[in-house]
Length: 128
Image (cartoon, rainbow, N blue to C red):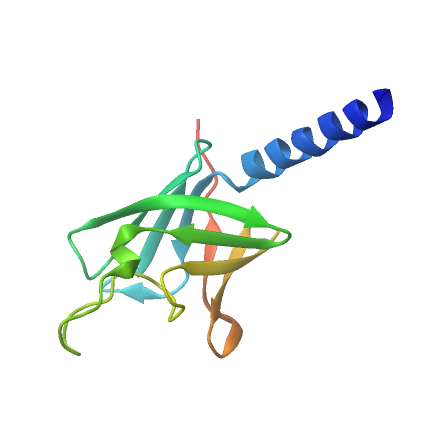
């Protein structure tokens, strides 16, 4: 019984540690008019927000990590564009979610074609 309790504590503290490492602000490495195409903010309460350079809307939702992958979920992602000229409210072409591979201080986009290093998101250093 003690072993199970000990392993449970180790597992749960590992999940919390991983969640704390991912929190922060990430800027896309591609730019639109001198601004990052996307700014992603991840907080410790498992919430995120996107600021997309081509939209005035603030996209918000929840996140979770499975192994080395960050998954983002939002009600905005479930909306279908009315026409082809309407901007997308997400970064990837995945259905009803966005997903990224986590490698050190970068997030690499997962699309239907696979993982790409184009327009990765880089974690910004916090200045104090």
